[in-house]
Image (cartoon, rainbow over all chains, first blue to last red; front, top):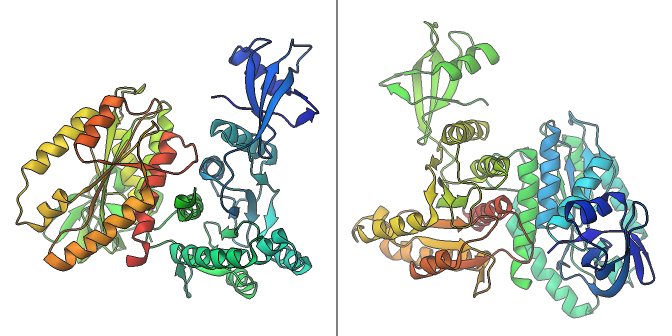
Length: 269
Length: 269
């Protein structure tokens, strides 16, 4: 199966942008009349008929629209420090999309060596990895944020939330996790996730309208989070996790955390 | 901490080979008299004093030898089909070493497009990833094997095992898992691993001398395992796993499996 992407959809017609048109008509040699699959990256899977090409953007007549089947039972937001070797961050992005993530924030921390983020390039990488793994929900990509601002913005946002909306409740009950290598009390990521899953089930049973469990994970740079960053996270109700005794690079720790969340909900698929 | 590697150890002296010597004395500028850490890749961590250099290989006087602290509570052997894009296989190797694996076999399957394996290069990659993540147990790397031969050799070997040795028992009770994308009955990898962990604990309690739990996992190529390969695996008592609904590339599936095993034993560290 091939999956194309466009955000230009009006009523029952859609238009592929220039790059997607080249991929569709030149690389994969689709002809007018062919039925193709495409998504808006927002959870919809469309089936449409390719129209006669006018100019550089191919038109599509939409025949059917379904809800994508790749909705996960949780909402995962991961904030990861940029890596010294930038390729490693991009590799993380690709793998995180494949395994499953809903939002990615690149962090600059007190001890970060790398502070430049290639947003457009990362956006293209997410698009291509999402299509490759047939996702109809594309993760949100943020621009770079200082770790301190990431935490304070999160807390400010939580304070604006109301009690009477399922989605707001999901945000308010978000499980916030930080990973660092300094000394201090830590819990295995599997224990943190397992315990939260249990309490969420209870919560959802009670309220029967709560949104998906929200999980927010922060992973620091090669030089680790600073003592101040860790203290701020603790004050903001982050739990501190450990990933066992293996010594991992930044991107390996990040992908291990994404995988831990994915596996924690594997049976509920 | 830096970790060097050598297999040239006699009594209380050791010699670094040319490449490790360059890394030690040129790149990191260690001088005679400096204390350095090194490993034999077989579970030993040595502390030694660098001697006056004679020629291209640095000598070391061994001061102390300890057992490495990175021994894992399981033995994981993963057999993965070479990927079409070879970089992706090498990326898998690096990450598998970081997270934890004991033996890697590159597979050629019926539907493999890639059939050439760069053994020496992979061996160097394992050495460098092991040193980077401070492992004193380096994984064993096999040369390329046909998937059919991999399974039959395994079964032949199991048939030679005796009942009265802990290590033989661990091999005989090995948990064999195959991942494929064809139709058929499958169990979530987390369920398979969780159930086996429970039964091993019972077994170890009973025998009080069984070796570590052995886990063998096979991951196929882009074109998937063939029906014949899957039938042979089933006949040879492999369990068929699924990795959930995410559509993963070969190397992503392989690293997800390695991570699933790692996380399954996280609390027992």
